[in-house]
Image (cartoon, rainbow, N blue to C red):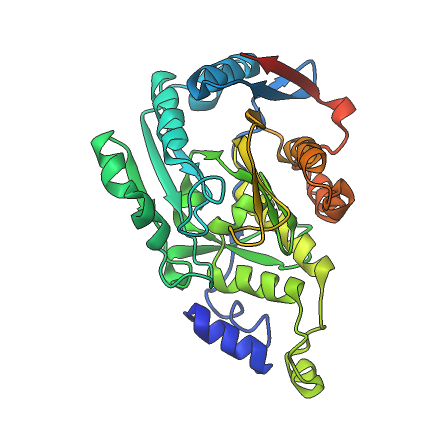
Length: 348
């Protein structure tokens, strides 16, 4: 079963869609979810988190990676690496990941011994008309080709591009559909921006995994989390949907991240989007933050970056994202307790 963004929204808002119907029967059986490599960036039993401040991005990233222990433990004897950016909308950084930083990380991965690097995302947001728009906005495919880096994008509405997966403990969706490129990637480097979000309150390491999930499933989570205030009571009854189910959305957010499990996340917080998001409009750009934050622990990263957002945005508090942090911690994606993390803060 394949479904377009417009079809899904129309069905959802009309109350005629049973929210599990599109997934049941899409494929027979489900594969065990991607496990990835256990966090290689650990010291003395504690996950490492490195925060680097500076003005020169390459110096900052090299210093941060060195403090983590380097990329050799990640790429091993020549693994292929997939870079997962945030390409939600055709707007420049920090709405979307800075292509120059993507290409820089790709170069550093190859220097460390990666046999190949591919950049991939499947934006599929119903806010845009085409998955290609952000890639075209940056002329990303051509620029990648010039650097010897493969750049590809997926179709969020094309069911056959996705693998149905399962893991014990998932509650929002017992089965999650993950893009084949993500599912089969030997190593994934997650490269989110740091910005506000209208439903999750924060976009960081965990939320960036939405772009790996089948469109209908992520749209369902978003619509439930955003509410159905315009639906009639009869429509609600037919759809079996509450007016707003934030718990479902927060749980799904963590479980989507669990279905992906990137080995390394690099948060670009040189400039952050405060007060609104995930796109420009109501949001404001806060310049001068000038940080990269790196870790193999997504929960610690989101906790640490949440404190940065709280420092610069008086409308935000970490309590807003505590529900999905708790779920992610239960799923063993990391720890919220930064006392259990070795935090290294550098200036270069």
